Image (cartoon, rainbow, N blue to C red):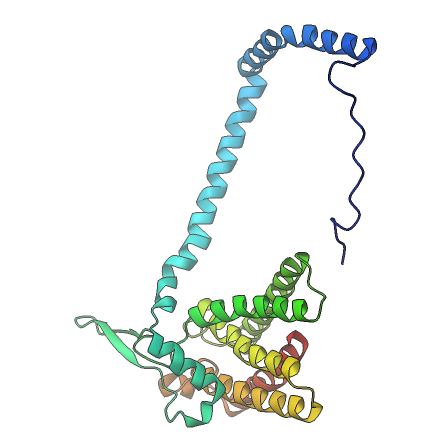
Length: 295
């Protein structure tokens, strides 16, 4: 990569103080004389600008455009965070983080995948899902965020061990990882829209959470690829990680793609089969490609 410190440019030689030529002294005196009257001219120009009707109209138009854009941001993006309280996804504990990591790496030990519900309004019987600290099956954003940062740092560490580290690598790794992350979220978001998944079940932060769990498998595979030299062990670890991640995503996203209860009656057998096939392809094939490329 480009190293801005590899070939430092030679600085021009400076003449000793007091040895400036006559031409330089003349230019310096002329510059000081020219700037002596500059403040008065600038003040006059500013007053003329604010007294100009066209300038005032332009300022009013700019202010109106800024207020309109601010209102648009509040109504759209502010509503996104308000409706899906992001603080919900950070209500975690040490016990939850440990249990969630074990669930991602060894999902076969889990007996139930149904998310727990808790009542928030007894009079209206309003139900909502329990927080991550109360339910290990609930999605969170703490583990995806920490694993994202750990992935970038571990990439830099192994690059330093191999002698290829450069400070620009951190920015490159972050941008590249974020691009894959956003591409995965857009893919599943568009797929859910095409399949007609209920808007209530396809919350954005839930999808961001489930998409970010892949970084756990990527970190494990990075350790295997850099610490082991046997290709057989590397491929075995890759297949084991992909199988665990795919099984975890299929069971976790089942309540979103294949709802139960009254919503299940609205799905035909053909639509249910297509959704099942999509869930398998996304959980195993798509994630396998991303994990191998990113690790």
